[in-house]
Image 1 (cartoon, helix red, strand yellow):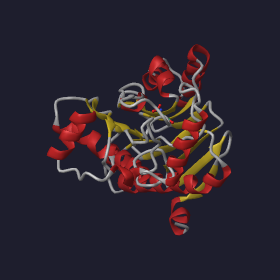
Image 2 (cartoon, helix red, strand yellow):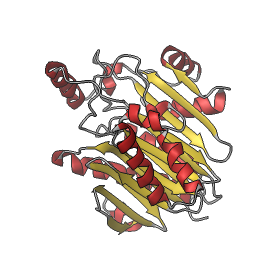
Image 3 (cartoon, protein in one colour):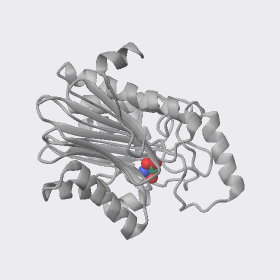
Length: 312
Ligand code: ASP
């Protein structure tokens, strides 16, 4: 099987001044994941590394750069899933760690559980020797400004946030195993303790070698109502292509619950799609040593991996 990776950097509205940084961030993540796959690494490792690279990049709403909750703190959700055996690990409402996706993987591999939250996740991180960092280290000037503005505006908390940044990756490796990983700071000015779709299996992501792998982004409460990632894979099981299944699932979410979002998907035969119902979604993919990426509807840039590495 030829390896494929697809990543996203969140669906929503991307402001012009942010485009360049976001574009480079998703390209860097896709290339990182692909290099792991090319060396014979697993889809699980590739998706975890790709997501960790975007968690470390302050352009995205995940890890450093996460949006803030109503108290002005960073609380993060993440999930990872292995399509080989349907094993999955997730964390929700975690604070003071740099890479929630690494902790999600530890939940998957070192516990008998699938999701640890808040205090329990923190205790588990300690046991696993995951370094604790001051919460302020995850806060950027931009997220602080946003938080203040939103407080002042006293805006409706159910309105879909205008700026994206949740990150995700899906991949298939040369053994035909698929995996997904998703990580987020959630919605800005969310209630303390709010758990979004990104920590919930079938919502923020799903991976099954028999069908494919999906990572989602968008209005979490809508995604959870329609169980978006699993819904998409169900449509593929019924014979739809990844693109058609993605559009059908997103359209259902829009018409049934009024929610907007985006998805990336790779099938068990290595076909992929990146689709969204929001104004924009940043994404990048590498297949056959060819990099493709875009942000706006219909946008698709192509370059070879060697070219892309040369310009990094
Ligand atoms: N789905 C994320 C959440 O609701 C947000 C996003 O994808 O932008 O937590």
